[in-house]
Length: 53
Image: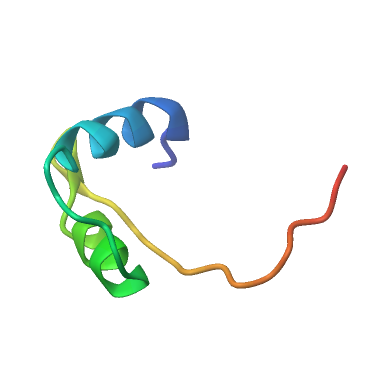
């Protein structure tokens, strides 16, 4: 099942409240342990530049 990123990202932002997101590892760890509607999120680090449409 694929979910829209907008509500998921809003919930993730809310869960970050108060956390110091100072490293990539911290951000990835928080995101990997986030659940949305009883489903765990899948997190991947993209280190390339996205192409414009």
